[in-house]
Every structure is written in structure tokens, then in C-alpha cells.
Image (cartoon, rainbow, N blue to C red; front, side, top):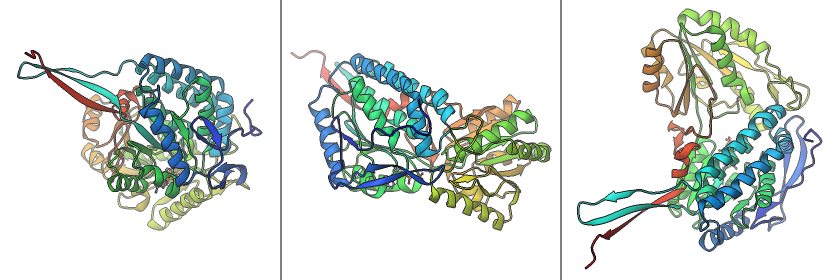
Length: 488
Ligand code: ADP
């Protein structure tokens, strides 16, 4: 039974099918954001451990059976992996609650089943990856093969430790790649649990490795490794740049980057106001605002601006902050002290920039890293709270007049991850969804995810797609084969 007393069974590195200590013997503390107390000491992978993991993954790719078995066989093993994840939803959800402050009941009943669904989606795709037959202008025939790209490094963040694991690992495994996961140092525990389940499911040794450690050491070693063929990364734009640099300076490995965002939720006068308030609240306060695609800028048309703010303040008071194991709670603690202090300092900045603080704005609770859901109004486009990713429960509300203004200001960001558009007018929907330079537009909804929907940004939110069949394309290489039709 998963609860706050859940035992941590796996805290070593998982390399070549075994749990092992790091070569240096070093460990690091992973902390419970509800209290700041230590949950477990985790083996700290360094460059030499990454070398070992890459060696195992390379051997499994170059000589092992995983890339060579029929896709349907890989699919069967991944189906088993998905079932094991579902069977252990309780325990995994508890681990992510302890390690990352995520809501336990949401994890157990929604997130972990969705993760199993992701694994199943790619298990089903494993035997449907094929190339094309091509016509040449001469009497030749030609075709393309889609081959697994090779050894994949997956560097993942702490805000969705389980979801990120499944999004990155499942398509890579489905196509026949081998993988080294470097989970975030703030939330390494569930990835190790998945490694254990993967072994139980029958994923061969060396195919999936998990090496917890720090970004500048373990993460950087993976990004610059000469024997890694691809890095798939989710995290900050700043680190995304470093990953790209490391690729350029090493072996030009292929990369997918899913980075920061400052996504607008754009609410028109004709919107259903209650729905708009509900969506705007969810878009920024869900997962304590620790969401790359959080709706952190709320643009509201002038006719409903005042009413929207009034209702939004009321609704934010009903948003309960507290222990994420409590089923009545909507928002747990920020991941760690650093993020907590960063969010609080942005709230101070918002005040000093002249935005109007109308709700929240303070830390809460007598221990741990809890912050009140916070609303600023009268926010201007050039304020830093409207431009920079805060990664916390801080909503910035702005007023607009016309649709052209909404487009221009919606796009007024270095980022382009997503946007929400709330309106009943189909012409507005069409115009907005074609004009916003973002990777996903949610119309009269927010956070509408599905394994089949590609996810990834425009502009400095990165490139390449997670999820959907598009993600498969990031883990395959296309080879062209041509041959004359008549040889003699
Ligand atoms: P956040 O700012 O949300 O904490 P980061 O981008 O810092 O996100 O971290 C996301 C992931 O990238 C984590 O697993 C982290 O350890 C890793 N990381 C951080 N710095 C580097 C680096 N220089 N090279 C490779 N990975 C890194």
C-alpha cells in the first residue's frame, strides 16, 4: 500500500541488469519537499558510471537480441512492462509524492495509468515501423528502411518523473534502441523502480540502464559521450543549449529538446466565464505550476476582465494547498528549497515591477516548501514576470482589446510551447490556432494530452516531438536502398 511510509527499495544505479553502487561509492540525499527531510541516500553516478552504462547499452545494441527481435516480440515485453506499472501504481505514486511532492491520488488513479497507456501505445507501434517503396526515374527500385538510431541518452527533469520516463523510454525501446536514463537529482527514485519492473517484464540486460547523478557531471557525460547516438532531453532552455553544445563538440549526436515555456491562455469576451476561470486556474496551479507548458500568462479581453479577475480570486481561495497524500488537497509543496526561493523571489519581483498582487503571494505551512496560489493583475508584456519562466503557482493576468492584439501579445515570448484559446466563436478559433507560433493549441480545454498527440515546441521551447508516432521518428534513422531492376 502506497503511503507516506512507503519503503524505498531501489536507490542504487541500474546498469546492465543489476543494481550497483557507483564506482566512487558516492551517494547523495534525496529529500521530501513536505519537510525537507532525507528520504534516501541514492548512489551518485559520475562520468565513469555513465561510461559503464553506455558500454552495456552499446553492447546490447550492437550485438544483443533487442534490436534484432521482431517488433511484435518487443511489443509483447513492453505490454508486460505496462501491466507491471499498473499493478504497482500505488507504490510508484507514493514514491513520486515523497520525492517530488506530487498529488498521490492523482498519481495513482490518473497519472500512473496514463503512463502504462503510453507504454502500451508504443508497444502497439513496435511492429508497425516501416519505410516506403520509392520510384526512381530509371529502371531501378528503391526503398527506405527505418532502423533504430542506436544508444539513447534520456535526460529528464523532476516535475513529472514518471511521465517523462515513459515518454522518453517507451518509443526508444519500441523501435529497438537501448537507453541510459539520467533522472533529475531531485527525483531519482521512481526511475529506479521502473528499472526493476523492466527487468521483471523481460527487457534484456543492458537495454535499459538508469544512472542517477547530477546534471553537470552525469548528465554532461551522457550528452558529450562519443558512443551515444541520440540524446532526448526535457528541462530548461539554458541546459538545452548546453546539450546542443555538447553534441556539437562531441559526435554530433542527434538531439530532441523539450524546453521552457511561457504559454498564454487567451480568453475572449464570448467565453463561458466559469469555464474560463476553471481552465485558467488549472493551467497555472496544476502540479504547483511546475509544468513546462503551464498557462502562466492569462490574456483576458476587456469586456470580461474585471469579472474574470473577481471570479478567479474566489476560485483560487478554494484551491487547497497542503500534504499531497491528503485526498482533498489540490497543490503540494514545490520540489525543493531552491525552486521555492526562486518562486518567492519572482513574487517579490512582480510587486516591484508594478504588477498588482490580488491573491496569495506568500509561503504557507510551518515546514516544507508550500506557496499560496498567487495572482497578479495589470501585468505588462515587458515585465520579467510576463517573460521569464517562474515554474510556480503564479498567474499573470493582462488585458487586451482586439484579436490582432491577442495574437501579437500571445506570441510576445521567446518561447512557443503551447497556448489555450477560450471562445465560442469558430472564426476566432481558426484564426488564433493558425496565428500562434506554438506547438499545441488547446481550444476550450487545457492539458489535453494523449499518447497519440505529438508534443513539442516552437522557438526557444525546443525541437523534435515527444509522444505520438512523431516521437518514433526521433528514434529511427532512415536508410535508402537502391538497386537496378535488371542486372544483366
Ligand atoms: P530545471 O531547471 O527544471 O531543474 P534542468 O534543465 O536544470 O531543469 O534539469 C533537467 C535535467 O537536466 C536534470 O536531469 C539535470 O540533472 C540535467 N542537467 C542539468 N545540467 C546539465 C548539463 N550541464 N548537462 C546535461 N544534463 C544536465
